[in-house]
Length: 87
Image (tube, rainbow, N blue to C red):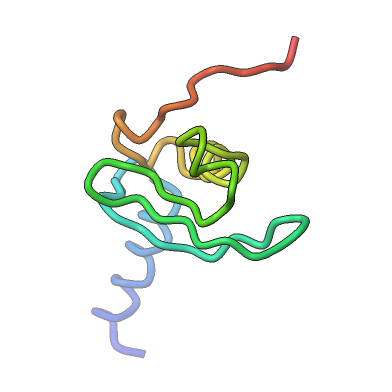
């Protein structure tokens, strides 16, 4: 293997450990919920989800789960649920 490729692989491994280097500005994903699959997106600084609850509340368990998963890779305005219900 060429030494330049080996260097890129090593750098990629290091970058993968340093998730704070990444900030999502847009994303789209399919979320497999308990009852159905939903399309979640973040664009124009707003979350969107195809579930019924989101249309009424502007947030849902699917968007909140992604906030937790990607928390250090999202801009601050994407973190709309910065509360925790655990004691």
